[in-house]
Image (cartoon, rainbow over all chains, first blue to last red; front, top):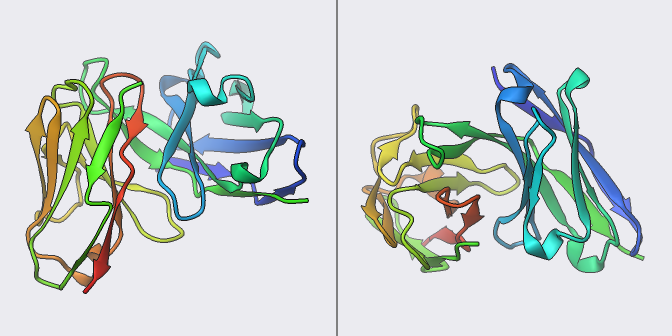
Length: 124
Length: 106
């Protein structure tokens, strides 16, 4: 079955960087985009960006543009999200999610599989 | 990107109640609207895709409707396991989420 397994919880100091991994299994990794979503404590879901595992192409939400980098290693079916310049308001759970298709149209997309989430705490 | 607005942000209801949650897009997204349920400490789970199609394995008490800019998620008879937070998400242009609706026990 499709599964996304993320790396474990992180505690970082302000100004540091964090790199979260997302290992995919149960499907062809290069066939589906991987998106990253941030959820601050008690808050909603905030889309951060996507990576095309086939080409390495990326797109980022403007507010994260200068601080986030999405990469992948196709040899181990793993996507990565690195966030730099951490601040206390980056304390959140970060999710990776597979963008699946329910039809042939470009917009007929759904988040059909999610990682378990990686809590990141930023504190001095 | 496309701003999505959900209402209400929270509601209290009893088991057996009919619950309706609204999601509004800033521009037309046709029917490229998905709904997710999130329980505390868990990842979101897909309920409805394409505005009105029920994801496999989801109980039929969940239904979705709407097109253009206005969408609705309805739970026809609330069950104890439905107390959770619900999010809408548009797939018309990249991806963005509504702010969420927390359904609490009255």
